[in-house]
Length: 228
Image (tube, rainbow, N blue to C red; front, top):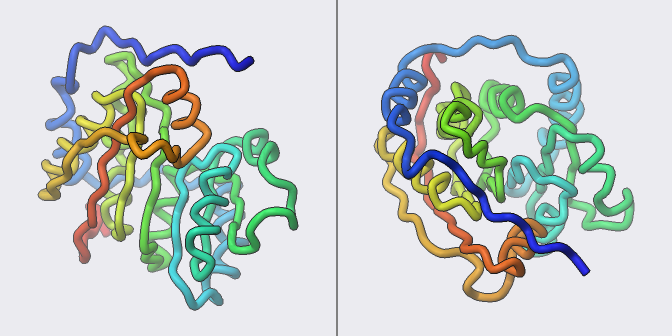
């Protein structure tokens, strides 16, 4: 029997006090961290496939084993689903090659680099999914959360429909506030009420009695990261 999952705990009582200032700075100041070689190689290999695909592009960012990516691929057989995760071990625990949907492309890459390369290459995914990113709940870990990270403007610039889910409501509320700083309005709402979890993470958390939360928003077109 699977052990119940522990709820997220944090000494941070609500939205981080420094979030708004941090997001404003990231929206205004260029970020030029060098791209990791392994991510560049993975991206270049993916680009050979993406550039020949004539249908929609979906990005499952931080996909883990890729189970959620396969679900998306089955729902959208016309789309190419990019299943991106930094862990080769997690990706390796997914469906064996040739056994899953043919429209899933698994890539080991650092998202902070992959998002920037995708933007620079002119990719425009129809949708981006962040299904249970690591919440990094300690107050000093704000910069590790995607909305508090310097790469946040690139997430916005890629555009499309963005869907974020987490079992830590504060994470989703912070992401909504970061979007608001960028001029984008998003509502936080319960997730998983329909009994159809979108990922193994959501299934696990709901089975453990956790509340789950999401936001889903259409990102504006024409956003450019600072310095681009």
